[in-house]
Image (cartoon, rainbow, N blue to C red; front, side, top):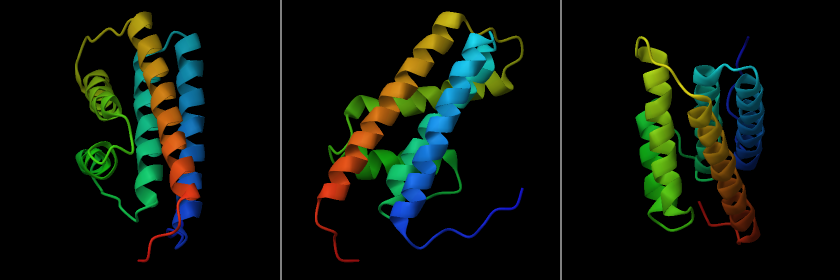
Length: 143
């Protein structure tokens, strides 16, 4: 798979990342239905992560680290009130759950945990979409 350079138009990048987020959310649902709960939690987190990056793209912000994405998201969107405060906590909790699932031996993830994570991811993405819609209705800021 060959990557391309990032587009200059931040709206194109944001839209791409949001679409990617929704595909990952759909995959999380399929994994949940198949009983692959640990993998479902991972895809749910990555759906949220891509949605957060979609929002960050509107401000030409990004990071190479997951912790950097979460920090920028909280700084520029949660603390400013553009995104509901609990979304910052949901993203961090989802990251921690994904890391436990990926790195802890003998970890069992229940159907309830995976279902809850999928619901939170769905809500998180809806909140990001709401913020993206609101930001697109504002006059463009001078760069």
